[in-house]
Structure formats: structure tokens, C-alpha cells
Length: 168
Image (cartoon, rainbow, N blue to C red; front, side, top):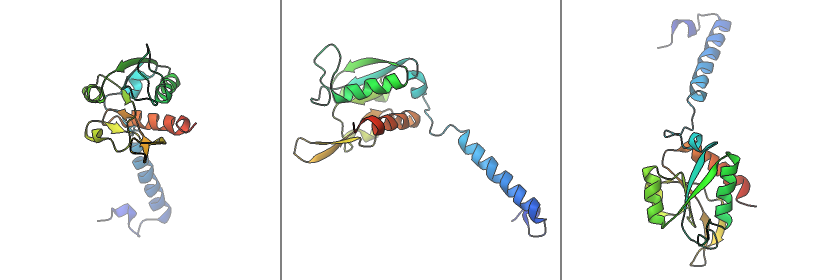
């Protein structure tokens, strides 16, 4: 049922004004919701603080044999941390251990040769593929990184960084 003020009997300028107010309120509600949001505040907690990054040894993408990880993915992580005025706290382990830690909230990000076809999608949110490499079978694959499920603001910020830096 159409409200009385919006029926054709109400003056046209009044109907247009009410419609504009309704649209404005609807849009204000959308933008003030903070979407995309991080229910656990991951991006806020790393900004000006510490990015807890987990990596697995996966040359040439990540070389985790030294005191600190090196390689293109390690550099992308350092760049993302720097963009958010954060220090990187590295954890080097197996992919399975890292994904378990990510799911528990002990890590903010996982990398190390992950691809967009990773089997971990029920445990972590994967970024879009940010660069294409040759997989072990000789076929092209797209590399991705992982963040905790539901941390959409963190995912969006990381994807924006990878979009900007991942192709360079």
C-alpha cells in the first residue's frame, strides 16, 4: 500500500522531496554500516601495530630458510605492512599449521605459494589471483594469499595492495 503522501494526490514537489529523503536515509544506512567490515577488527589491529604473517617455504615465492623470509611474496607482505604502518611478525610453518593458526585468530595473513584453487577456502578467505605463475604440472596458476574468514575490510585492503604491487 502506498503511503498517503506518496500517492498521486499529494503535490509533486512534496512527493519528490520525500522520495529523495528516503533514498538519502537508505544510502546513509549503507555507508555508516562500515561495509566491508572486519568483525574481529583485523585491519584496525594491524594499522600502526603488528601484522602477524604466516609463510611456508615455497621457493621461489617464499624462501623461509634464513632469519627472515625472502622472495616476492615476503616483499609484498612487507609492503602491505609498511602501507599500514605495521611491523611484520613472521611465523614459518607448514601450510596446514598456518591455516589452523589463521582460523584460530593467531595469524592475520598466510602466504607461500597458495593458489586461487587452494583447498583451504572453507578455513580462510583467499584473495583474487594477483599474478600468474607456472604450476608444478607446467600449467598456469594464479597466486593468492589468505586472511581470516569474514575479515572483509582486511581482504579488500590486501587485494588493493596486491592489485597495485603484485604485477610489478
